[in-house]
Length: 149
Image 1 (tube, rainbow, N blue to C red):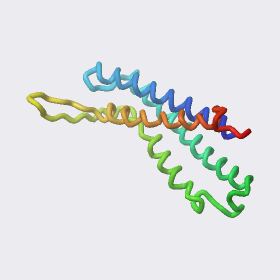
Image 2: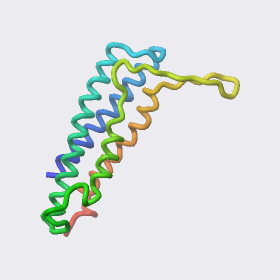
Image 3: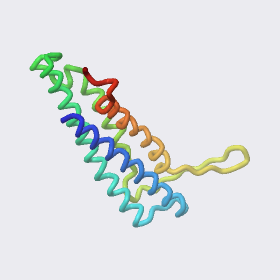
């Protein structure tokens, strides 16, 4: 069922976001250098991201089959011909942004009489917060207001 896949995707996204946050804090407190523990977390995050990507692909395949069952799309329609492929690829790109193990790139500059240092890890972590859209997708499944009567 689509509700199970979407719930699993939201749980995976939540775990990935929390893991990114914990690993980013570890990275920052270690003077922007990864540790073995942090690299292990990054590896787990990459594995969970692969599972999340699989959930997204299955979501779109199920969605297409639901359209076909409801006769909203013809049997010959594909993800590409329905326009779902572009959205799926955009979601896959957004959800696949993770910091791989041992990727410790930082950059710094000067501004307002001070020096700033940013790491790609922190930037990817902030972008990763956009994965919360998967929780909003659940609203349509669990809300009484959007259900059929």
